[in-house]
Length: 520
Image (tube, rainbow, N blue to C red):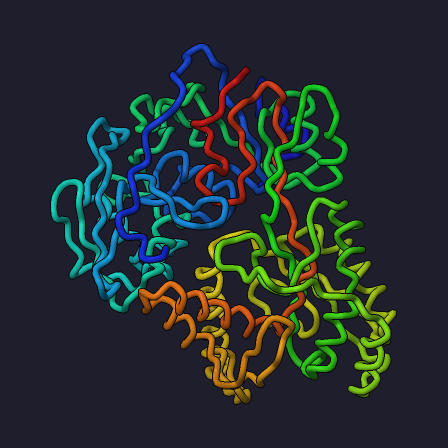
């Protein structure tokens, strides 16, 4: 259940092929048993159970998993894979066999983690009964053929070539634990489970990066952002995740607290769904009729930048030669009229996971009226309901672009299967086949391009230039289906007494890594 602010305060108490990825040198400040408990707050509902490194649907789950279980690799700020528990990773010439060498890392039970533990962890992730977050990412791993070559080296065999496979090894939900036991995790992370309260973790003194300064790490959750903000100001928590722009503006310049912001942490879309905007002229009208600058200024309070209608500006493999989308209200109105849609109703559906979609909808509604459309606000759809056709708000946190494209392809395939099961014969399907050609400012995508085929090409070729071109075309293929109106920052509020908190995009190797944080 959600904590009220009073209860909350009371509870606080006081790629390329990546052959031969080099080893990462161990580092870390010495532990100080005298440092107080570090208490951190996330959005969400409680109470929190034992952290499971393979079930990480929420940010708080991913942060707790990273605290107790290391992944083989981690993502850097540009979403490239970097060494972590694995000292090196490299493929054979086919991209189907990968050699992984582990660094020596002592687990919470005092023994080194082994290659057998890696395979056992993956067996649990891939077991349907687990319902693991990362199961789709590892679905092409052939566990029957993969093997431990020694205690610290293993060979991973894939069903299909995948020269992008190292990205998977840094994904949330792939933490390595003793014997693959996620329900009672014994990992190599900087903290371990201990005591009767699963929301409080104890320091792992033998962590390979050095023991954390704080002896204990406590996690709290509250869905009310104002509660989290006020608890930081009152000194009841030292680190608060996901502050809204208005809270950031209130904190800036305040004594005793500060804000650490990571630019380019989330892309916010307006998706075109269903019949109301099926006409390409209407989609183009929306694309050039939306005032991105006004939205960023008003909704994000200038803590972000206008979108370019593609996911992930600033991330590895994002095309960097796309010009900004210029607003042209006159041309947008002409397109609406040419489509015979003057005064047509366009539902605006909120994002259930993004509270900022509500103020954004107010401004987008005014902008749609300016080009001759009639907006109709809708609450977010229920989780199991069919999507409401129209314009849908969607916030996508930063993650590697190839994995984002794969997830999009899986969603399309799932949608196509659902429609086929319902007997809905939709022309063209939803798997990327049959898109009409279109020309953008930075290149042309024609009807022969197919999302699945482009992603297969990108994964299957050792040629970096061919891979980049396939991924570029895949991104341009998706561009007409949504309007990315902004790329926003992620904000963490911290006590001014904390050091070691770096600007970090979500789920990267320095995001919510509390073994790095110390008082004073």
